[in-house]
Length: 187
Image (cartoon, rainbow, N blue to C red; front, side):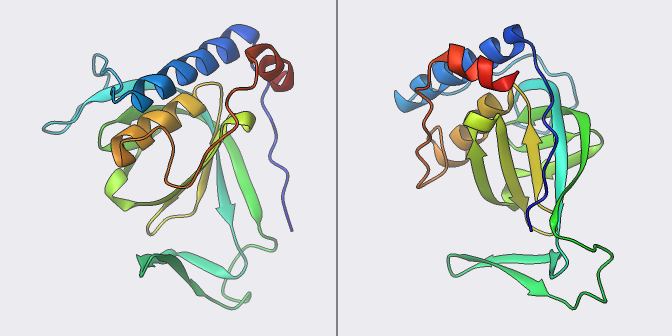
């Protein structure tokens, strides 16, 4: 069963700026360029660069049948340990906990509030720029959905770092939708 995640309303300036920045970064990365680092707002590790900080809406995916803390990536596939419903506290599968948090994206990790998520533990990136969102699957953690006007741009930054391309392997989004239509859909 699919759970509905609430959608936050963003103003036209936010959506315009986020979409234009993502579109320009996609073209830059496709030509072999790389995102530009900004002045750090947090302590960084050796060789780590910060690319941006902004607010995102965060939701976690909960399952009645899967223990995400046991996830592993092996032989080209993602595996989770199944467990009985009696062991879990969730009554229904779905996205939960829609909350707004500060996000910082660097060359090595994503920071959400007080949590640091290392890109070396990132198993899967599922971008959905037309919904202003991305689903991220980190080893040993619940899947998370990030949503907001800067999330498509952040997704391109992460993919440029991880894959050297604007999108994860096999993903070709429909990002040539005119910005006017995108902003009307976001409100």
